[in-house]
Length: 245
Length: 388
Image (cartoon, rainbow over all chains, first blue to last red; front, side):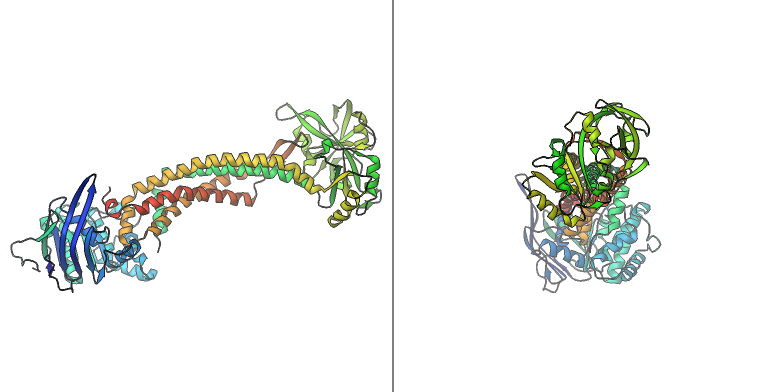
């Protein structure tokens, strides 16, 4: 169940209350997010849409602990992250967040295997356990035969699948996807969205997706619209407002 | 856990051109640094090797070198009777010596250089444990010369059997001695009495007396006896200390000037490393931000980039040291400021100098790596993630 009115009952996986984010640009103060509330349950798949500059990526960065809000609180799986210090926030990110970026953000000098292994280097897993996890993750995204390829040897869609494998390999609490299909052609984009669908449906992942692509957004259980820093539920044909299809 | 090392090593390989520039900058600096210190080390080693731990050297009180000293034959006799003086079948092992400076043309350039000509007693070989390696030792009372093994190779006219003229006399080269790489290898030896006569110096006067002691431990008693004798005003030193002091002025000058040059070059090399690492950080800001987003902390990022700078520095240091290694043993010459004479000596590239070169390189690596590493770790992740 996804709510934006602050009426969640406290059992939500992600709970956002009164979130404000302001930026200073010269003498001008820009209010990107204003008093935003959000509750997302475990296993939800939420898409955020909105015009450029509406604060979608800012919201995703705040939820992922990459930025700090001006005011308000974010609680994920019972941990309030808005008051965590830099070091603790870094540790928290490693444990709870899987990021998927528009430009894939793979490390070009590392192979697919080594890229996917990166989050596991922050765990206590042994080398053989890490190998097993990485191979499993790459097989889930259909790249079991491309493990030792470098990013430059892969297509855009394959790179994004490696990035997805990297995001899920440490079994994070939720996945944050920032325009994951923004740099792909339609066919590759559909394959990526199929994969994300599967992660939600078969592996019970919680996914928060920012996109400009209405086709990609249509895959989500819930579509939210951000405009001028305010979050509103979008109404679409065949959907149940605020809940799963 | 830290960011994997192959990330840095592969990045260095991919950005090989700027890596090579930084490596060469550091290699050049380390090369100069080690070469200069090897020069100073060679000079010092050559002079210090001239001293023997079981020998004492006596000068007139207050003299800083043999050039300004004078000791009479009477005083030498008193010295011969002092306790601790070693003896052989010919009597006490004491050599009263005089030195003069004579100009001879260098083989390499044809220009004159000052050569130290030492008038010694026939016991000088036994006192110093020096051996004649070809020809023979001079006959006392004759105008004959024996020359150090560097002399024939460095100056014109000193081949065995040749005749040379200096100081108003004509001398025949009758032998070559090997002084084990010490300063004596650059000297020409003659009979002290003959040399005094040719130079019209007072007979029975020496400038220094070198004494072989029964053991190095006998030195203190020997010294105390002579310095408390009211008939003598002599400075008594271990021969080793005397030559160590002689080497200090030039060694210090070479070391200070060389270190200054290396430091100035080092500043340039650090800027080279800074430039390389800042551009590495700028080019890879999105990669760094990605790794921080994945959960690698600022400490890991700093360590990673400092490691990368240290790799550059280590390879640079290694190349610098290897480049200087062929200099080891190469003979060169310099003026000994205490005697105003030309001294041949060899570069000595020793293991401690090589370690020093590598340490110097690593210091440059840290200086060139830390500021960019800190910048990398401090960048705002959310902003850096969006950079191309």
